[in-house]
Image (cartoon, rainbow, N blue to C red; front, side, top):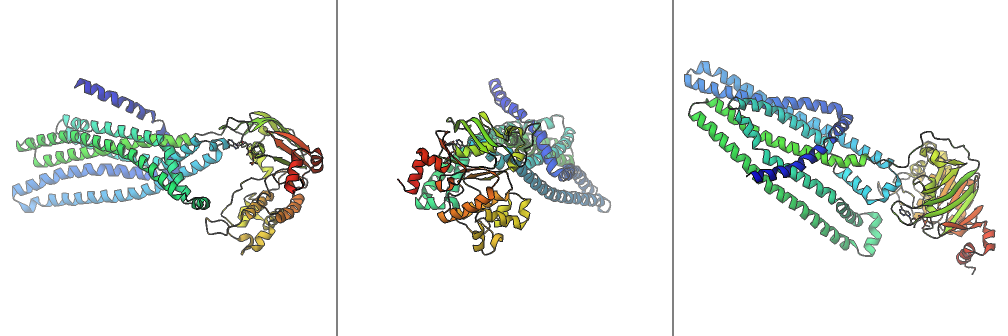
Length: 612
Ligand code: ATP
């Protein structure tokens, strides 16, 4: 017996410690709820207090009612005796009605509160996702944390408050019921408490196991979503159909879900078994106590009214204790899962603004300089750039050429401070970009990325996102379209620049090259000193490229421009061309100079023009 008790304490102690460790999440969660729905929460708390008092009133009235009925029937004087029971019955009915009303009201308030809190948390998650470094997005850990924050924690703070409230309500009622029972015998409230201890242990253990399993299985949960995604989106349609991969992904999905469901059900089964045992222990104590009371009533120690009152109080007490226990379990579970949310909300960017930022001159006068840059992506072991240096004089157009993976796009990400280099520095007009506010730096740069976003909005909005202020003026939109050689695209669309694009909301679909030129218009809407273009003509045909090049030259005149391209027909128009090889610049010069040099550029030119 002693050994069993020692073992029990040993089992419970770590769970209890784990529960205590979660407590710091509690004030934080409450602050979240207060910020999101302070007044609703207050209203709800008031309703809870009312709800907690009503059952005790019902129990007390029950005793009076039974005793008055017994007295009335015993006395045989119906005219005198019937008035009190009738009055008490009306009071009882009013109390029960009030219970129903407050419950319905509380449910409505609680729905409003839960919606507000959930939306608030979604906003916080979005805010954090927008604040973290690009490097976070490179790791599966980030997506695991985001997945848990999104799917587990969003409803948890509101649920936590609800559990707290219900616990408070149940606790208040319980104390009152305990006082009633204490009137019968001091040990009765104690028996009530004891009968729920096994259930407490079971609940806590189940929650810890469930949470451990959730954390452990996050990547697999995400993988199953990935299998679903592969079979059900527009982006994946073509290759999945072509290679007939739907069955493959469905089979993988089913196998994975089978395993996850099996694990989850194993947990639920062992939890159910433990609950039955704990319930049996509680019921034994409850049954024994009721028999005791019944015997007392038979021996005339207590009246029938008292028997009804104590019996009701004890049964309700047991029910309340059990539900309070569930609530405690819920609170604990919510706190554990809230840890996931706070873990995500605590992610801090490592790339930050300087305390005392400098200002960039506008327009810039000297240009952009990369000095001895070395950089390895945080998730990689191979450097993307090593001792790389490049000078782009203000107002000039520089073309960067090089093999795939040479590190060209990485240069843009470093200049935009999506990552910081491990060595070396990047300067604009002699100012280290780390000394600039990030937003200020980025405002000076117009960029066309290799795979630009296709916004499911109108053409105008697609372009206006480049500069919301400038985008308000329709003339600016048209100018940007012309600079990007995209005017002819909107001329073909039924509603011109007001045409809705993209598949999300029933818009028109564009070709890859057309989307690219819309993205280019977006970049050109921004009146920036520095222009970065990553493969601007990759999806253009030769005619579109020729048309675009003349508009492009006009647009970038006087701006500092870097163009990454594999097309020598685009590169040859640059003031200076650099060839990147093995993470360094190996050739530099104008088109003619590089042809005369007879190196890689000249070889590529002969190959592309077919002049070999
Ligand atoms: P391409 O011409 O094909 O666009 P690129 O010259 O622009 O190539 P980068 O995109 O700069 O090449 O990539 C340089 C190297 O860095 C490549 O080896 C690539 O695998 C690696 N790399 C790029 N992005 C990441 C990343 N987010 N995490 C880890 N490694 C990366």
